[in-house]
Image (cartoon, rainbow over all chains, first blue to last red; front, side):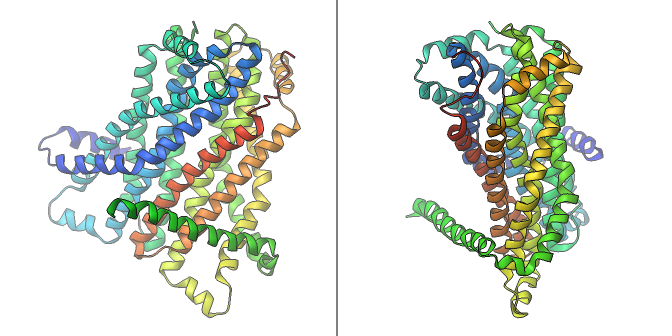
Length: 245
Length: 264
């Protein structure tokens, strides 16, 4: 919590020495995550909302409603959620391992002695990079999640036209913004938890491993708890998006 | 040649991993692991004490989530009474296995990598070999056996936690369905084979996660940094793995047969 405040303050206050680090962290997260995320979102979109919901709707003879369901399932819930899981598991653990190793080798203390603020030069770029990356990955996950849905529709032998029709009548800008904001905040939670755990690692090799373990557990729990509160608030404050047309 | 190196590397790692996993599974089935049954029981105890509550907590939150989304969706199609379907399907068939897999990967999987990795780094595994212990049996096979002993029960309790959370969200929080109405639909839309399939899915995930954790931990190298990277790498593989199992399981168990009492 204190680290969050410190990070935001030092992100906003000049000077801004973290440009290069920001870009490299951004590319790092991008390179690490694109493939796991692709597999995960297609698998998730095809399996959970795709097949199960299609089964349910086929019984009603209303498979064309699957598009509408995908707005609800994929945009509002699963895309941000899968992105958060993958980012926490892949980029978050890498960040904790990296910072933890630096802490163990006393590089962080060395930086401090040199008069370089580790929060400003290490945490802030990771924090910003992860926020931007999760926000952008949300769109990516949406695309591939919907691809999973299309796959499920095709497996059931239905035409795609009705899928898109119900999808676009139901999709609203509020949904998309809600999804993006949620995802960006997930990125912030993950970055802060993982940086904190990395920077406070202690106790040699076992310590780094344990720090990664704890970081990922705390990040998951934090993301899920936050997700529940956010969905609840969004649904309650925007009743119009809960109506399926 | 440059771009070919990466996929080649992957294939080589995959082969090594399969060999290693085959060895562990063989030792559990070959009953050689029972020489170290005490150690297996100790691992069971560690699993129960350190991981159970976290997994149940995550499943509980997922259950709440399923409950509210389901209730809003069913209201919009004009069938609010059917919110129980979501509790039965979303919880039992899809999200509880996923949540279980995620938390297993995060808590147990990385825990095993960190533990075995630091043993490898501090040469404890080599010390075991010198003392005449079979280190794969002693360290990895016992953990797999412990997981198989404990996790089915933990998983069933986790499903219970998820159901309870959905009930809370649908009946107590949103309050459009009476408790009796919820349970009528809820029990109508599931049957014992569903529970068995869900359990199977979760157990395949758990087995995979423990094996991947053992592989990366056992083969860690390169000092404290190496342990950290091995932990991070195992997490990547586990996440992909959990999603693939989830999808294949759904396709296999429910793909052609929704098993629901609607229509003909």
